[in-house]
Amino acid sequence: LAWFFIYKIFFIYALTFIMNSVTIKIIIREGLILPKILCDVKQQLFKTTREILKEGSDCFNMRALAQRSDIALGTIYNYYDSKVDLIIDMISQQWEECFYNIESLACQDFFLSMEKLYFHIYSHLRNFESDWLKLLATLSIKEKLVARRVEKKYMDRMLDLIGLFLSKDKELLSSLVVQKFGLERISRYIFDNFMNMLKTDNKDFSFLDFILRAIFEKK
Image (cartoon, rainbow, N blue to C red; front, side, top):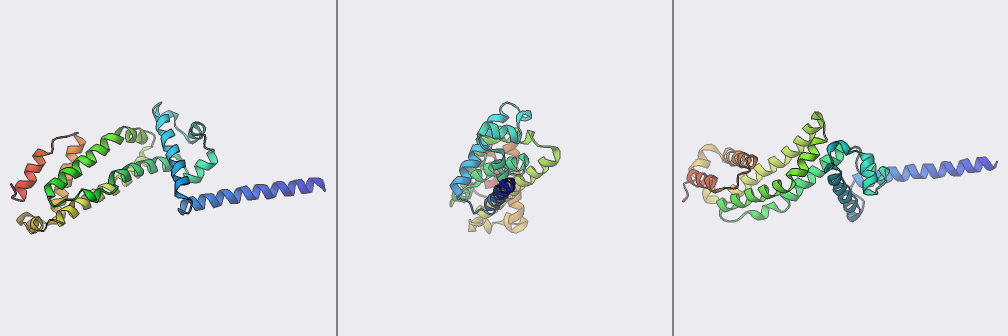
């Protein structure tokens, strides 16, 4: 009889633990957990991931992350189902930091807005480029495609932002080049030049500024 009660108590505790774990995971995924708790755990995981990756991508796995961060492995899995989910979230956060309040860069001078936008993105890319490359090195070819889709989402936002900045200038919006080729095509042209310059680590915006002013017939 005594063993029966021991097993019963053990079963109740085990069931309670499982239910709490499931509940915590649901709360986290649905965004119902206190933001500070969520933020603190994630930031610790991100920080530890970067530290591990400095030693090489082969050293990174969820168990090593748990040991180095002093966060229980089960707790980590409440936040991320796999290291891929963690990596993608880190990449997304870096892009979110880049785009945070980015609309505030817009000013009455469209050309100045473009210069400010370019160097804002340039600065952020330089800051997290090393982290980003290390993160991608931990992913398989298939997993990198997921990361590229995340990147594309932010590239589309950049393209939309250029169009938004241009649309705020009524004079340029009614210019001959926009009337002939359309806002979307002009925005794409500027975006493509942005990307080419970023890829070549170009810090000189004066040439593109000159070309844009010539296109819009502005001195």
